[in-house]
Amino acid sequence: MINPIDGIRIATGALTANILRSLLTMLGIVIGVGAVIVMVAVGAGAREMIGSQIRSIGSNLLIVVPGATTQTGARLGSGSVHTLKSSDAEAMMKEAPAVRLAAPVWGDVSQAVYSAKNWRTRVNGTTREYFPIREWPLRFGRMFSPEDERYASKVALLGATVVENLFGDEYPVGKFIRIKNTPFEVIGVLEKKGQSPRGEDQDDGIFIPLKTAQFRLFGSPFPDEVKAILVQSKDVDQIADAEKQIDELLTKRHKIGRNQEKDFSVRNLTEILNTAKKTLDIMTTLLGAIAAISLVVGGIGIMNIMLVSVTERTREIGIRMAVGARSGDILSQFLIEAVTLSMLGGMLGTLVGIIGAYFFAKASSWPALVNPLAIAVALGFSGAVGIFFGFYPAFKASRLHPIEALRYE
Image 1 (cartoon, rainbow, N blue to C red):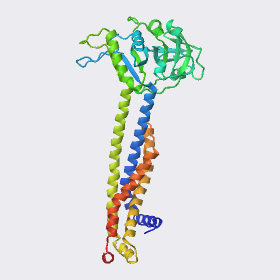
Image 2 (image 1 turned 180 degrees about the horizontal axis):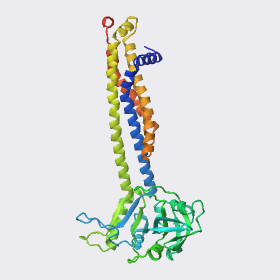
Image 3 (image 1 turned 180 degrees about the vertical axis):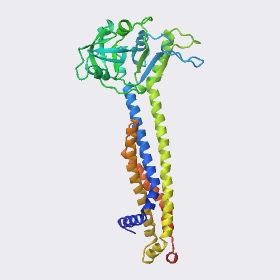
């Protein structure tokens, strides 16, 4: 049997004898491997991004908003109805067994001023439950106290973006900012959250006690009105139960009849994001499969060029057999050439894929995570393509009769 090292040396010599033809033959493998690596890297980056967004909004989340889809398909938005109250959130925590926490939210966009600096941001009135629901800890300072909430204290928690634009490197806790000419004491700064699933900067916000927002800052002709209620179920398996219980509870509290349109909607945020993640996984698989077709096309190219090579080297094969080479030696020699051609294309494709993933990430601001396992699989697949498509030409070469091969012109 031929020595593998000698086989690779002979194969390399045969391939470099017509280097342009070899490069063109490898092109399909290069494109296939490169495309697979880019697709897998982009898909992995997108999954990581969606995963971080899911983690950033919290876990086991539901959001209740005013308005509902009517039978005609029209949507009554939260700005057109005023049906949710903070007492609804309290009732959810008391009467819905699957609900762990519920936080009413009332907010609006306003100008925040500190010294000579000002920043337009969203001011959210809410309760202490909001932050464990969002899994959003303090970076430093303190949280709202029960007295702050009960007496509508003028205190504020700031997001990282607001701190950066109003205070820069100055320590903000204990300082006073003005919102709509009302002074607020900064009592804490929240940890950085990053972008929301909708691409919004979650750190660009100020949080104040709910009653402070309702009665001291914004005011409302509708007593105790809130614009949304954020809800966390006790467990991921209880999200559906919590959704059903909330629906039944609010239907009863709002005195909605059987044939009446509901004046609220319950949305499962975690389910929406997980569905997006599954859809992305399917799309990545499909794109990867399409890219893998290039490997098959490249394999066909290798088979074609190896058949040509067998024809061109028929006399060489006859001479080798005449001096003692066995059929197995000829088979392994041509198989090594096919695999070498395929693996060289795979390595070039890997380099192209890594560079392509890097430039895609730079151009689109979309993360691309190159997985070593994906590289190993792509290289392994390219080697398998070489064996599969190189076997028939190698087998054909090994079955040549020495006398007939020597007579070939």
